[in-house]
Image (cartoon, rainbow, N blue to C red; front, side, top):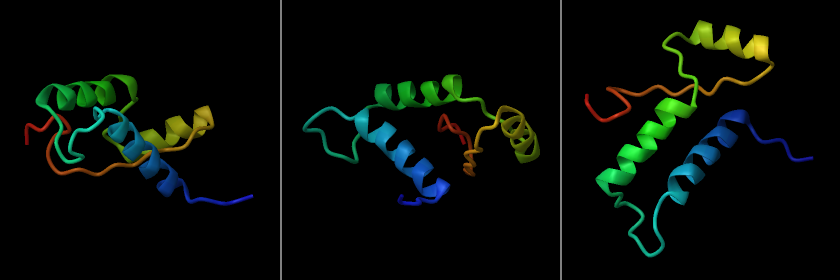
Length: 80
């Protein structure tokens, strides 16, 4: 069995999510404003976000799930 670090799996999953949103033939570094808006809204609605790492760890422990930790500067929707 191959062991892959959880952080690597999470980054691969996030990258595949964003890559799958690009239309065929589009330049990989160009995403329309509409697609960007849809991707951000999906992340904000479908994922349970916590402002506090301790709360996220406690909730994950209760549910028997992992924590995906993402540290960003500014706001996810681009309004920094």
